[in-house]
Image (cartoon, helix red, strand yellow):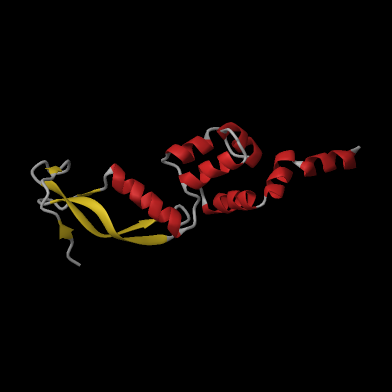
Length: 150
């Protein structure tokens, strides 16, 4: 498949230092953290006109992450922020309630880490069912175990 190349002036190639990186849009295949192979159509990249090296810009990396989030139903940064806003939680409070490691929510909100599909489903259930969130927050099952042990 032939790529579409723009006439826009490019940047010097980092690899061969003799060519120019020019914008192209073509299919790009990558793998998710779950091991799925996904091909992104019309992926914006830059390719050297001499050595053929391909580079993904920061913008292209964000494009890949957003595409993969949708493809595997991962929670977007906006949805994660909506969860925090819905329950008026700080990142630290949310981490404690969800049983996550320290600074994990910040890593998901700012990148480069992504929320797994399973945690995405977990948070979506909590967003859809405030009662489930309250049960998790109160840890009622822990109190029930204490009564049994007494």
